[in-house]
Amino acid sequence: MSGTPFLKMNGLGNAILVVDIRDQGRISSETARHLAAQPRTAFDQAMVIAAPRTPGTDALVTIYNADGSKAGACGNGTRCVAYYLGRETGKSELLLETVSGLLAVTNADQEMITVDMGKPRFEWDQIPLEEPFADTTGIELQVGPIDKPALHTPSVVNVGNPHAVFWVHNDPDEYALDRFGPLLENHPIFPERANISVAQVLAPDRIKVRVWERGAGLTLACGTAACAVAVTAARKGLAARAATIVLPGGELQISWRESDDHILMTGPWELEHEGTLDAELTEEGAA
Ligand SMILES: N[C@@H](CCC[C@H](N)C(=O)O)C(=O)O
Image (cartoon, rainbow, N blue to C red; front, side, top):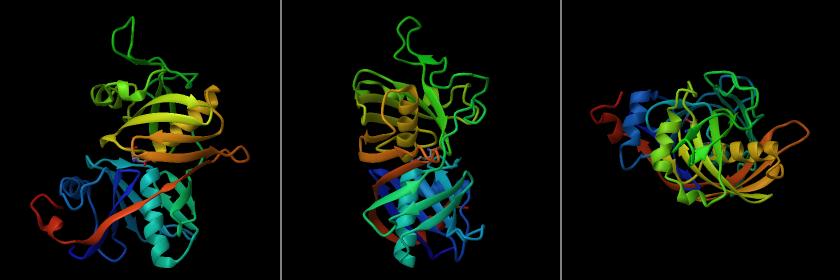
């Protein structure tokens, strides 16, 4: 499968590998894990572009985490794919398909790209949770000492992938997310695991967030976590429906549109280098 084009990109420091298999090749979970471990292609998420499956769409995108697991959505990666396809086609509007649904992109030819991430889902079995919770604005879950938990009562939501958001009064940097993240990601309440955020409301339109990503660990940014934080904050009355989400790698603008319930995410992309997958795929371990 030599000659498969790739772009090493990032969205606010969230490491993204865009791989174009429209002409040839396939990427398995084992290959993805292998590519994630190579210096030239290391990623938090790989966005694998295949020919469109549904009429009217521009591409079918499969998303892999660094551990080889698949994800239903990746906000930062979607902007990177939009940059690549916008550069190729000259189109500013694109429609991308993932396992979670359709993503409409605007301004694909600009430095700040907007993605319509669709509608959030709040029912316990949509997230999914292992057992019913009537109120998903704060579920019974905590870490730390029972009488003084470090993190507790997260809001949960599915924005194409499962998220839990823990609200804190202190700076999110003060929490040992490297320690709590893996425990919470793999907690039995989340049968499909979950992305874990710690969020502090700085103002009704500004929220600081750190994220432990399912399948990738601590990352500098996560677009879907930004969406999850914004909609759950608005739902709890902690923030307005439009907010700036401040992540370690930079800021994303999130707006939860009243007219159709869709979430709009706007942010930048960065191209680091590009080439073709040759050496990486001949290494031992590549599928
Ligand atoms: N970095 C992404 C989210 C990637 C997927 C996530 N780790 C999952 O498994 O659901 C983003 O920018 O949204």
